[in-house]
Amino acid sequence: MNNLFDWLTDILPHGSGIDCDWHFDMKNETIRASNSYHVMDEHGSYRGYADFTLAIAVADDGQLEFDRLTFHGRDSQYLNRQYMLRDYLEDTLAMSLAQENLQ
Image (cartoon, rainbow, N blue to C red; front, side):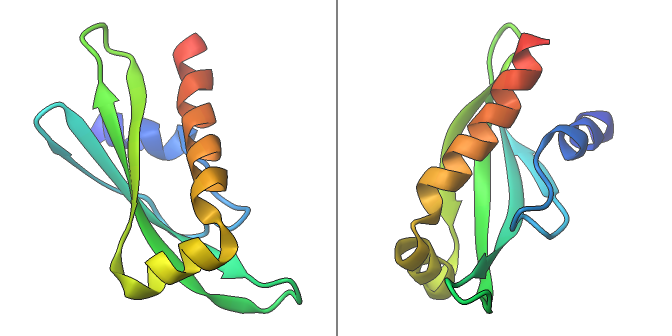
């Protein structure tokens, strides 16, 4: 399992706001990958961290599939709505998984 989590650490994005370490756990056939997005406003000031968890489904053929993105806590949900983080993070994370599945 640690090899899978190490591999995910390598393929999931780091930087461009996703500035913290990835943390993983697995329940049933779903991997949960948690991190935080460091939110910056239009003036370049940091507004805080939006904590999120990416659920990754493991298909029968071993492919990893984006399942859902969840923001944790009132502050994270507020930052998500205020700065429209969901679309950006969903696209970025899904693209990371899709690119790796093509290789």
